Image 1 (cartoon, rainbow, N blue to C red):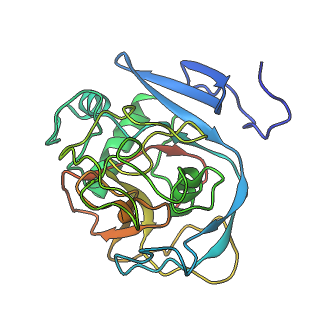
Image 2 (image 1 turned 135 degrees about the vertical axis):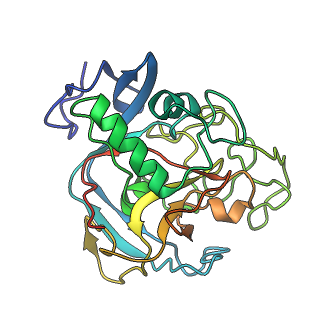
Image 3 (image 1 turned 90 degrees about the vertical axis):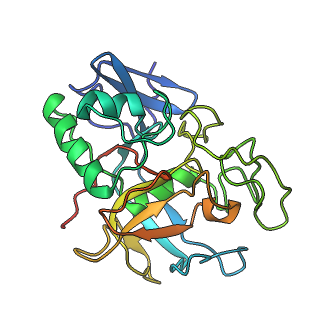
Length: 274
Protein backbone atom coordinates (compact mmCIF):
# COMPACT_ATOMS: atom_id res chain seq x y z
CA UNK A 1 0.00 0.00 0.00
CA UNK A 2 1.18 3.52 -0.82
CA UNK A 3 1.16 5.96 2.11
CA UNK A 4 -1.26 8.65 0.91
CA UNK A 5 -0.19 11.07 3.66
CA UNK A 6 3.12 11.65 1.92
CA UNK A 7 3.76 14.04 -0.96
CA UNK A 8 4.14 11.44 -3.66
CA UNK A 9 4.56 12.45 -7.32
CA UNK A 10 1.47 13.27 -9.35
CA UNK A 11 2.24 10.46 -11.80
CA UNK A 12 2.89 7.08 -10.19
CA UNK A 13 3.85 4.76 -11.69
CA UNK A 14 5.33 6.71 -14.59
CA UNK A 15 5.41 5.30 -18.10
CA UNK A 16 9.17 4.71 -18.06
CA UNK A 17 8.96 2.40 -15.05
CA UNK A 18 8.99 -1.37 -15.39
CA UNK A 19 8.79 -1.95 -11.61
CA UNK A 20 7.65 0.18 -8.69
CA UNK A 21 6.77 -0.01 -5.02
CA UNK A 22 7.22 1.32 -1.52
CA UNK A 23 9.57 0.03 1.18
CA UNK A 24 11.00 1.21 4.50
CA UNK A 25 12.88 4.01 2.68
CA UNK A 26 9.95 5.31 0.66
CA UNK A 27 8.73 5.14 -2.90
CA UNK A 28 10.82 3.75 -5.74
CA UNK A 29 10.58 3.02 -9.45
CA UNK A 30 12.93 1.04 -11.66
CA UNK A 31 13.61 0.88 -15.37
CA UNK A 32 15.13 -1.97 -17.34
CA UNK A 33 17.47 -1.46 -20.25
CA UNK A 34 18.73 -4.57 -22.07
CA UNK A 35 17.77 -6.60 -18.96
CA UNK A 36 19.74 -4.28 -16.65
CA UNK A 37 17.70 -2.93 -13.76
CA UNK A 38 18.28 0.53 -12.30
CA UNK A 39 16.33 1.98 -9.35
CA UNK A 40 15.44 5.61 -8.68
CA UNK A 41 14.01 6.73 -5.35
CA UNK A 42 11.45 9.47 -4.70
CA UNK A 43 12.61 12.36 -2.52
CA UNK A 44 9.86 14.58 -1.16
CA UNK A 45 10.14 18.38 -1.34
CA UNK A 46 11.56 20.06 1.74
CA UNK A 47 13.96 22.57 3.25
CA UNK A 48 17.42 22.04 4.73
CA UNK A 49 20.57 23.88 5.74
CA UNK A 50 23.12 23.60 2.93
CA UNK A 51 26.82 24.09 3.62
CA UNK A 52 28.63 23.72 6.93
CA UNK A 53 28.71 25.56 10.26
CA UNK A 54 31.81 27.54 11.15
CA UNK A 55 32.89 24.98 13.76
CA UNK A 56 32.70 21.91 11.51
CA UNK A 57 36.19 20.33 11.36
CA UNK A 58 37.94 20.47 7.97
CA UNK A 59 35.25 22.68 6.41
CA UNK A 60 36.24 24.30 3.12
CA UNK A 61 39.29 21.99 3.03
CA UNK A 62 39.44 22.30 -0.75
CA UNK A 63 39.10 26.06 -0.55
CA UNK A 64 35.48 25.99 -1.75
CA UNK A 65 32.83 28.13 -0.13
CA UNK A 66 30.54 26.27 2.30
CA UNK A 67 28.53 29.22 3.67
CA UNK A 68 25.63 27.80 5.67
CA UNK A 69 22.31 28.87 4.18
CA UNK A 70 18.74 27.64 3.96
CA UNK A 71 17.61 25.93 0.77
CA UNK A 72 14.01 25.03 -0.06
CA UNK A 73 13.32 22.45 -2.75
CA UNK A 74 9.71 23.15 -3.69
CA UNK A 75 9.25 20.03 -5.79
CA UNK A 76 10.10 16.40 -5.15
CA UNK A 77 12.44 14.56 -7.49
CA UNK A 78 13.74 11.11 -8.35
CA UNK A 79 17.36 10.16 -7.68
CA UNK A 80 19.32 7.03 -8.46
CA UNK A 81 19.63 4.67 -5.51
CA UNK A 82 23.19 4.12 -6.71
CA UNK A 83 25.63 5.74 -9.07
CA UNK A 84 25.50 4.52 -12.66
CA UNK A 85 27.04 1.06 -12.84
CA UNK A 86 29.50 -0.19 -15.40
CA UNK A 87 27.00 -2.69 -16.78
CA UNK A 88 24.42 0.04 -17.46
CA UNK A 89 27.02 2.34 -18.99
CA UNK A 90 28.32 -0.41 -21.26
CA UNK A 91 24.83 -1.41 -22.35
CA UNK A 92 24.08 2.16 -23.44
CA UNK A 93 27.45 3.32 -24.76
CA UNK A 94 29.06 0.05 -25.88
CA UNK A 95 32.36 0.39 -24.02
CA UNK A 96 33.64 0.61 -20.45
CA UNK A 97 36.22 3.28 -19.61
CA UNK A 98 36.59 2.24 -15.95
CA UNK A 99 39.92 1.41 -14.37
CA UNK A 100 38.41 -0.88 -11.72
CA UNK A 101 36.36 -3.33 -13.74
CA UNK A 102 33.16 -4.89 -12.41
CA UNK A 103 29.57 -4.94 -13.61
CA UNK A 104 28.22 -3.64 -10.29
CA UNK A 105 31.00 -1.17 -9.61
CA UNK A 106 30.44 2.49 -10.47
CA UNK A 107 31.45 3.56 -13.93
CA UNK A 108 34.42 5.93 -13.55
CA UNK A 109 36.88 7.83 -15.70
CA UNK A 110 33.88 9.65 -17.17
CA UNK A 111 33.74 13.41 -17.63
CA UNK A 112 30.72 15.67 -17.11
CA UNK A 113 30.48 15.85 -20.90
CA UNK A 114 30.57 12.04 -21.16
CA UNK A 115 27.73 11.81 -18.63
CA UNK A 116 25.65 14.23 -20.72
CA UNK A 117 26.12 12.11 -23.85
CA UNK A 118 25.19 8.96 -21.94
CA UNK A 119 21.96 10.51 -20.65
CA UNK A 120 20.98 11.83 -24.07
CA UNK A 121 21.28 8.32 -25.47
CA UNK A 122 19.48 6.66 -22.54
CA UNK A 123 16.61 9.16 -22.77
CA UNK A 124 16.22 8.31 -26.46
CA UNK A 125 16.06 4.62 -25.65
CA UNK A 126 13.49 4.92 -22.82
CA UNK A 127 10.62 7.30 -23.68
CA UNK A 128 9.65 9.59 -20.83
CA UNK A 129 12.72 8.86 -18.70
CA UNK A 130 14.25 12.34 -19.07
CA UNK A 131 17.14 11.88 -16.65
CA UNK A 132 19.71 14.58 -15.91
CA UNK A 133 22.38 15.13 -13.30
CA UNK A 134 21.11 16.35 -9.92
CA UNK A 135 21.64 19.96 -9.01
CA UNK A 136 24.16 20.53 -6.24
CA UNK A 137 21.33 21.41 -3.86
CA UNK A 138 19.42 18.24 -4.72
CA UNK A 139 22.56 16.21 -4.19
CA UNK A 140 23.30 17.57 -0.71
CA UNK A 141 19.64 17.32 0.33
CA UNK A 142 19.71 13.66 -0.68
CA UNK A 143 23.06 12.98 0.96
CA UNK A 144 21.99 14.44 4.29
CA UNK A 145 18.64 12.61 4.31
CA UNK A 146 17.36 14.89 7.05
CA UNK A 147 20.58 15.11 9.09
CA UNK A 148 22.67 18.17 10.01
CA UNK A 149 25.89 16.36 10.99
CA UNK A 150 29.05 16.26 8.83
CA UNK A 151 27.98 12.85 7.52
CA UNK A 152 24.65 11.08 7.26
CA UNK A 153 26.12 8.55 9.71
CA UNK A 154 26.78 11.24 12.34
CA UNK A 155 29.78 13.25 13.49
CA UNK A 156 32.26 10.81 11.95
CA UNK A 157 32.60 7.82 9.65
CA UNK A 158 34.48 4.56 9.48
CA UNK A 159 35.64 2.51 6.50
CA UNK A 160 32.92 0.00 7.36
CA UNK A 161 30.46 2.70 6.27
CA UNK A 162 32.34 4.65 3.58
CA UNK A 163 35.03 3.82 1.00
CA UNK A 164 37.84 6.37 1.52
CA UNK A 165 41.53 6.30 2.42
CA UNK A 166 41.37 5.02 5.99
CA UNK A 167 44.95 6.15 6.61
CA UNK A 168 43.52 9.68 6.76
CA UNK A 169 40.43 9.62 9.01
CA UNK A 170 38.21 12.62 9.69
CA UNK A 171 38.90 14.82 12.72
CA UNK A 172 39.64 12.55 15.70
CA UNK A 173 38.47 9.37 13.99
CA UNK A 174 40.32 6.07 14.02
CA UNK A 175 42.36 4.84 11.09
CA UNK A 176 40.76 2.19 8.91
CA UNK A 177 41.08 0.25 5.70
CA UNK A 178 42.43 1.72 2.49
CA UNK A 179 40.91 -0.42 -0.28
CA UNK A 180 42.82 1.37 -3.06
CA UNK A 181 39.91 0.85 -5.46
CA UNK A 182 36.18 1.29 -5.89
CA UNK A 183 33.68 -1.20 -4.47
CA UNK A 184 30.36 -2.38 -5.85
CA UNK A 185 27.63 0.22 -5.56
CA UNK A 186 25.67 -1.57 -2.81
CA UNK A 187 28.62 -2.91 -0.81
CA UNK A 188 28.28 -0.37 2.01
CA UNK A 189 25.19 0.84 3.94
CA UNK A 190 22.61 3.17 2.40
CA UNK A 191 21.18 6.23 4.12
CA UNK A 192 17.65 6.51 5.51
CA UNK A 193 16.31 7.49 2.11
CA UNK A 194 17.68 4.33 0.48
CA UNK A 195 20.60 6.01 -1.31
CA UNK A 196 23.89 4.12 -1.44
CA UNK A 197 27.38 5.59 -1.08
CA UNK A 198 26.56 9.26 -1.24
CA UNK A 199 29.74 9.44 0.85
CA UNK A 200 32.91 8.07 -0.73
CA UNK A 201 33.65 5.53 -3.48
CA UNK A 202 33.52 8.03 -6.38
CA UNK A 203 33.04 11.78 -6.63
CA UNK A 204 29.72 12.47 -8.36
CA UNK A 205 29.18 15.09 -11.03
CA UNK A 206 26.41 17.62 -10.41
CA UNK A 207 24.68 19.75 -13.01
CA UNK A 208 25.84 23.12 -11.62
CA UNK A 209 28.68 25.36 -12.55
CA UNK A 210 30.67 26.18 -9.42
CA UNK A 211 29.88 29.42 -7.61
CA UNK A 212 29.98 30.78 -4.06
CA UNK A 213 26.87 30.31 -1.98
CA UNK A 214 24.49 33.12 -1.02
CA UNK A 215 24.03 33.92 2.68
CA UNK A 216 20.27 34.41 2.34
CA UNK A 217 17.67 31.64 1.96
CA UNK A 218 17.06 30.41 -1.59
CA UNK A 219 14.42 28.33 -3.36
CA UNK A 220 15.31 25.73 -6.00
CA UNK A 221 18.83 27.00 -6.74
CA UNK A 222 20.32 26.01 -10.08
CA UNK A 223 23.73 27.65 -9.87
CA UNK A 224 25.09 30.18 -12.38
CA UNK A 225 24.19 30.01 -16.07
CA UNK A 226 27.82 29.60 -17.13
CA UNK A 227 31.27 29.12 -15.70
CA UNK A 228 34.58 27.30 -15.98
CA UNK A 229 34.23 24.34 -13.57
CA UNK A 230 31.42 21.95 -12.73
CA UNK A 231 30.70 20.77 -9.19
CA UNK A 232 31.54 17.29 -7.89
CA UNK A 233 30.28 15.90 -4.58
CA UNK A 234 30.79 13.04 -2.17
CA UNK A 235 34.51 12.27 -1.90
CA UNK A 236 36.12 9.08 -3.17
CA UNK A 237 38.08 5.91 -2.49
CA UNK A 238 41.45 7.62 -2.96
CA UNK A 239 41.14 10.65 -0.68
CA UNK A 240 40.73 11.30 3.03
CA UNK A 241 37.65 11.20 5.22
CA UNK A 242 37.03 14.93 5.50
CA UNK A 243 36.36 15.23 1.77
CA UNK A 244 33.44 12.80 2.13
CA UNK A 245 31.47 15.28 4.29
CA UNK A 246 27.96 16.13 3.14
CA UNK A 247 29.03 19.76 2.56
CA UNK A 248 32.34 19.07 0.80
CA UNK A 249 32.62 20.53 -2.71
CA UNK A 250 35.10 19.91 -5.51
CA UNK A 251 35.56 21.76 -8.80
CA UNK A 252 36.68 20.16 -12.07
CA UNK A 253 36.49 21.16 -15.71
CA UNK A 254 33.66 19.39 -17.56
CA UNK A 255 36.09 17.47 -19.79
CA UNK A 256 38.08 16.01 -16.87
CA UNK A 257 38.24 12.22 -16.47
CA UNK A 258 39.78 10.16 -13.68
CA UNK A 259 39.23 6.89 -11.83
CA UNK A 260 37.53 8.63 -8.89
CA UNK A 261 34.76 10.28 -10.96
CA UNK A 262 31.26 8.91 -11.60
CA UNK A 263 27.68 10.17 -11.54
CA UNK A 264 24.10 9.51 -10.43
CA UNK A 265 20.87 9.98 -12.40
CA UNK A 266 18.10 12.39 -11.40
CA UNK A 267 14.62 13.27 -12.65
CA UNK A 268 12.71 16.38 -11.68
CA UNK A 269 13.60 20.02 -11.21
CA UNK A 270 17.03 19.89 -12.84
CA UNK A 271 16.70 22.34 -15.75
CA UNK A 272 19.86 24.42 -16.05
CA UNK A 273 21.10 26.90 -18.61
CA UNK A 274 24.52 26.07 -19.98
